Image (tube, rainbow, N blue to C red; front, side, top):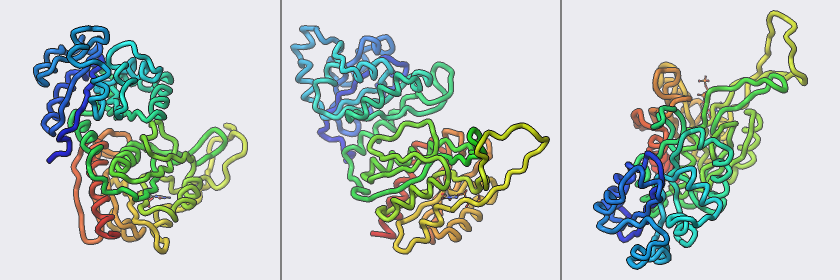
Length: 401
Ligand code: CTP
């Protein structure tokens, strides 16, 4: 049993180079037991022929809204009612814009407007289109209406640029669809997390920061949310969209992060410190911009509170998960950190090497707990978050029941 038996999925395909991957996705969905019907936009047909999907599904592919032949086989209203789920993959910037406006100017947009089924969009576009304020605004509008946007993944794009915009791989999309119908092992569990960097002000315009992108923490928040947890994410400054269903609290400094965490920690079951919290902050940030008046400047730094250690030391505190970023002696340093901070599980990774770490899309983790270890090899941060989420769930259930 793979969980999609008897599920009826309407796969929408819009115009993007990732459309060729939709044929693989279709196969994966069918293999998992789903019945799939395909609707293509006109632009999608410039990338892949309807015949491909017709041959794979055994059904004519619907492409036109006002075609009497297509309407007589299954009308657009029947199709909208038939679907348990509409998955649009790839979902182009243009399609998302049309959906955000509530347009019904082709078959797929009309179906999305007419359906009662949940709608998921596997975003795929050039990274500048993804970051464009118009697309950001459209995503927000769609998410407020309950349309979930999956991805995009980051990496090398078909246009040669590197950044977010690639459609999630078919197997990742399949995983997400399966998880919609799967058991939710963290149902009712409240998770408080930190993610991203902190900024420690030197003066009103300068700060001490670090290279954390927030990707790992945000991916983990999304995974745990899909496993049924209620997530509150205390986040340093990042350029990432908030995962659907996650409550986000924005902070800048370590002290603000500590305040936001300690105000919420009593009501959480699991605390996960993914943030790269600055260990030190300037003792006395200058009230005005520091002028270039001398050849050298001394900056006195004082230690920041260790949020993870503070949470782990609470009596009857939550199950705690920490991260350890090390440049050498990974296992020994991480184990020492686990014991000294008193955390239940520590996820250690190498930083400063060629692959993996803060700015990379990939990472590998060594997970350590009292009496056990598991190594997760180099993979995308999204996949890694899924595997880490599974281990956190298992360890939490083992320790706390
Ligand atoms: N952490 C925290 N508050 C801090 C510093 C770190 O909550 N002030 C958390 C991080 O979120 C992470 C873990 O502690 O989960 C490990 O942080 P790291 O910076 O690797 O360890 P440090 O204790 O700062 O040790 P060192 O810098 O010496 O490696």
